Image 1 (cartoon, rainbow, N blue to C red):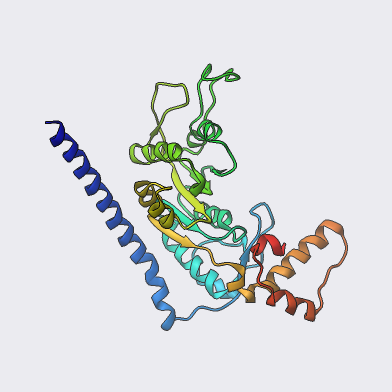
Image 2: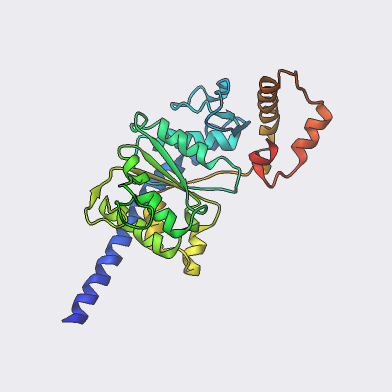
Length: 293
């Protein structure tokens, strides 16, 4: 009898994973169909990103056919316009999004763009860097805690999942989560409820999850350091942010924008000579936009 129950449980997990894989493949096939349009309707060139707290860049005519508002993302490069077209298709969805890319490529800014062009735009966008906190702190931040749960817990505290109800929760560096936290996050995604640290009550949470990583999570899955079932839950829609070295034509627009910001901050006119700009365009920028800025 025990063997039969175990077999039934394993079979149920396999069926669930196959369902998620099928859903992922269907959604991503629709998204990536945009790339096949290049031969018929080639995309123009030039783009990049800046902090969401800064003023919008002027809208490029090359982006006139886009539905969404991506004014906080500079330029109109071929690769970034491809990203924008994908964003146009996925923003109205509630499906989880996984953003891959090197550090400094603007993953959080793109996550913001997904949220602010979605039906959840009127609700809160909350973010957390999963690699910056210990497991215990991350659990408390995400799920909250009740009074008396630990020393210093003097009152009930809502976690980010509760704060983001109706909106979007952005989990940066999700690949750095511990195995235990991966398990707890998976349970939330499966059941749609959370339980505060030290609490007994389950709280329903309607939250869209956008996650990001600079790791290749599929390789982490193969290495046994990231859960396969969680990977397929997060990677329903995948976006891959290109590094700046693959978008060198974006650099002049970025430099112009950052110089304008510097001028605004200092009150002093800033400019760059063409030879210097050419040298910047030839550099490989391992730190991407963050290094250029």
